[in-house]
Amino acid sequence: MKKTQIITTVFEYDSIDELSTEDQELVLNAKEAALRAYTPYSKFNVGAALLLENGKLVQGNNQENAAYPSGLCAERVAVFYANAQYPDVAVKTIAITSHTNGSFLESPVPPCGSCRQVLLETEDRYKQPIKVILCGERKIKIVESIKQLLPLFFDKEMLDE
Image (cartoon, rainbow, N blue to C red; front, side):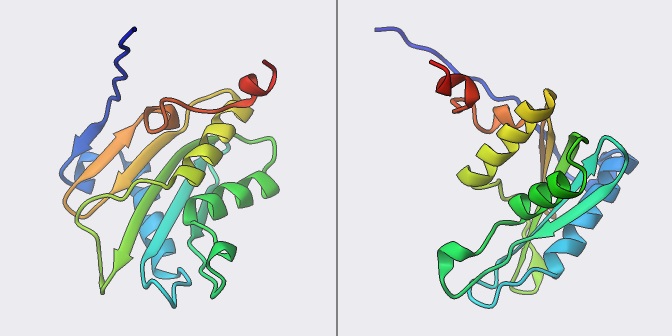
């Protein structure tokens, strides 16, 4: 038997004011997107904002459907839109935030497993890490790559084995 330890580095902040101006703008765009989410069933709004390498900002929000599997998360809405509109431009940073019961959540909410996998594929596609900003009202967490949130990942290299 061999024991392996996986360490994830997470940077924590208490306020949006501690972030760079660029990251603050991205968080505000994610919040704006969250308020426009279509969530008639869960009432749990998620907003995502991407900063692309060309300086463009792309927003996404969760879209629900009465047939639950037919909906889509905010992160994937944003990434798929960015890849469709700017197929040759890498994603530099994604900010994610959540809103429910009339206010933004105090603690950040991380992306689901499917969204983590899509973000990983996007990192691999452009061969550069995506900084992930998870924003709550009282705490902000930042990782420098989606691989910090998905350390035992499945990628295209495994398809070649």
